Image 1 (cartoon, helix red, strand yellow):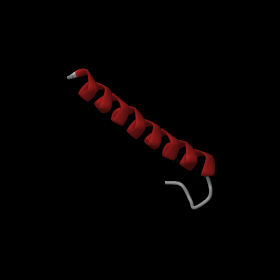
Image 2 (cartoon, rainbow, N blue to C red):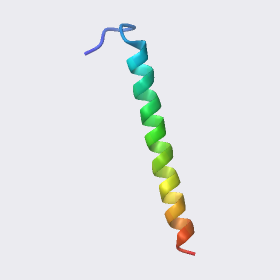
Image 3 (cartoon, rainbow, N blue to C red):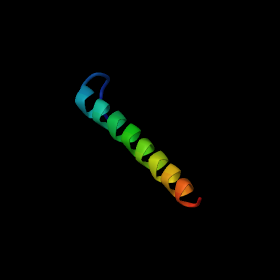
Image 4 (cartoon, one colour):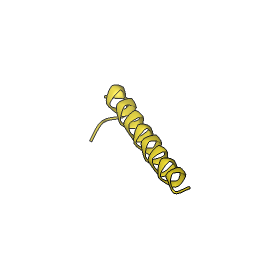
Amino acid sequence: MFLKGSAPIMESLTVTLAIASIMVLGYYIVGTLLQRD
């Protein structure tokens, strides 16, 4: 819905949230695997 370059803050925020979600998910998976020992 955004024009190119109309909302760089929103785009960067979306990318940051996506990266944070992936990192949290990966951290949770690693923690679960380590707890199985």
